[in-house]
Image (cartoon, rainbow, N blue to C red):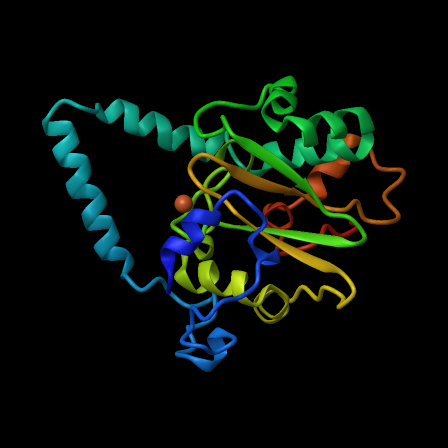
Amino acid sequence: MERKRFIWISGRAISNMPLDSSFGGKDTMDDVAVPPPVSGTYPVPESDIAARVQALESILLEKGLLSSDAIDKVVETYEKDIGPMLGAKVVARTWTNPAFRARLLENAVAACKELGIGGAQGEHLVAIENTDKVHNVIVCTLCSCYPWTVLGLPPNWYKYPQYRSRIVIEPRKMLKEDFGLDIPDGKEIRVWDSSSELRYFVIPERPLGTENLTEEELASIVTREAMIGVAEVRKP
Ligand code: FE
């Protein structure tokens, strides 16, 4: 896998770029060693990761670089205050307020601030809109960069190599096989590669038949998966 290739093109819709011979001249990853589906497990056992985190935490605490209160505070904030409900609020506002939508697409950081949403890791947030012609999906091919400020912490599968590699190579097939999302052939799929400097989130299409819902009701039907681009929002 040519990791560098992804770094260079990070920050642009990578799916529009022609495939090169990254996979030994073969067209898709199906022809080489097939990775387990996203529902598989991460290659490193969770107990190993937990041990590593604990070791790092102990060293940082021991050296006085971090306090345990600070760690607890961050965990608590992400458990209670920051999560996909914030992104859902933003999406619902774009569905009911075209002027807000325009501002969000122009400058997501400033528009989110209007709703009191922002903070660490949200300095370079970019909103991309699904339309009847284009479906968007986000990934971090390098690691796990994710729009924390609007979506909270990423789902585990978002960090799996299986997702990070395959969604770029064959997004239509992967969306259908792993997420049950069938994007019609006539619709273009764009895959956006996030980085620590630039984090994308998807504004899904508003489902038909939701004209009578309030903004709050609309927010309640917007899912994290829809804002990653691996699902559509459904009418309740
Ligand atoms: Fe990353």
